[in-house]
Amino acid sequence: MTSPADRFLTTRWTRVLAARGDSPDARQALSDLCAVNYAPVLRFLRASGHDGDEAQDLAHGFFAQVLEHGGLDGVDRARGRFRSYLLGALKHFIGAQRARESRLKRGAGLEQESLDTDTAHGPVPAALQCEPPDTVFDREWALAIIDRALASLEEEQAAAGSGEVFAALRPWLSASAAPPVHAEVATQLGMSEGALRVAIHRLRKRFRELVRAAVLQTLQDESELDSEMQHLIKALAGANT
Image 1 (cartoon, rainbow, N blue to C red):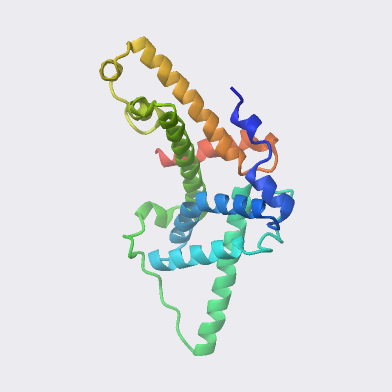
Image 2 (cartoon, helix red, strand yellow):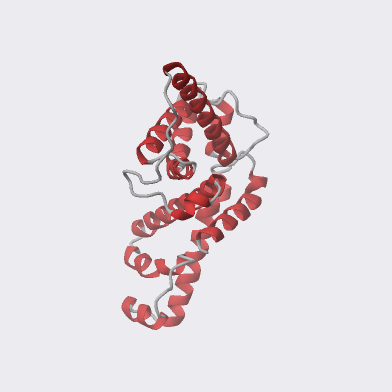
């Protein structure tokens, strides 16, 4: 089987950088990357002190700006990670918004009000109120990558007629969930425990391949894949503590 890394040497981020958003292919690639990273951006904004509605408005405005033609004019090709670009662009966007609001408030003679951590989408978790927003962003980015890989794996298994097996084995793909007893699942699926362990091993291997493929899509240079995978693992370790 051809590995995901072999199939995706021309990554989405490479396509975006090559065309700077001037082609339909590059714009679609950028749109796909932004869609995957919506949740990390939203949680970063909330961790930075913006309430639920304000965070959503800022996220929508930010992605609209990124997706506009010419939104990548300031991208440094040496920074080959979409994650790094997105976080830097987001901070620049927030700074510009704050400067604009400050000018408007000074002009209108209004006083600044403190932000409330209770939001229309529920209170900002206490952990997010003390964690650095960059840490929150990295963790949410890692979780988004994992979710994308899981969704791809589920689609593959369903297409192969193994949806029931995937549903039964999915707990073994999670680092935080306690998997069920092997004997019970083997009986449920009508296979031996040995066959079940082989199936789990193969599913985990394929899952790792899809995670690497998802990360690779956010890179310009495949040589950065291993270091970015280490960054993902480190970010996930914080999510599971």
